Image: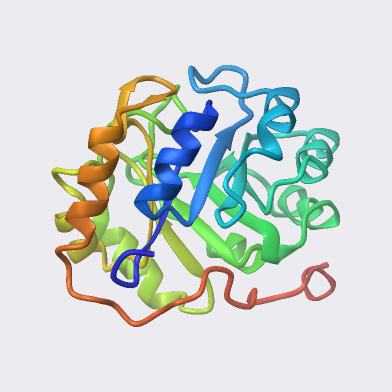
Length: 235
């Protein structure tokens, strides 16, 4: 945590990058299990490095439109949290089924909201943590494109029972402006601190955390506030 802001460094593919992120002050390390991603890490590769990963940093497994069986395998792989990307058109009953596999306190939901679209607020009740990423018609994260920081601030303000994670195009050069405009307490950085997809630039990592250190300290806000509803209340 840097001045009250928690940081997830996503797209980790190696122990050296995981250690560098932890030394800088990362609170979370993200491992992308989506095979189409250039930062893809298989479950077997994650398990091979798992015991050598920094123990003080939480691990987040990132999945995209998983089947329930795929979701269960990710849940059982040793991640502290599961970050689930899904289209905004997903039906609510299908989303509720995720709670049979991953409880709300371990689930980070990342809806893909197209331009002009709006977040279906029913999804907010399913998970303690919501991740707001930049929409791309093909890519899932890691685009380097910034998102709508003002909309993030509004969603966070209106849904205070959840923790909100700001993602999308964050870098050492814009993180201060992003935090100020979005009023984010948790941020997710990926391509903005890379030398190439899946390979972190350690100088950029240090610059990112150094930029956060210039901001005034925020009050502590824990990740994973109580979910707004239980599965029993939703079905």
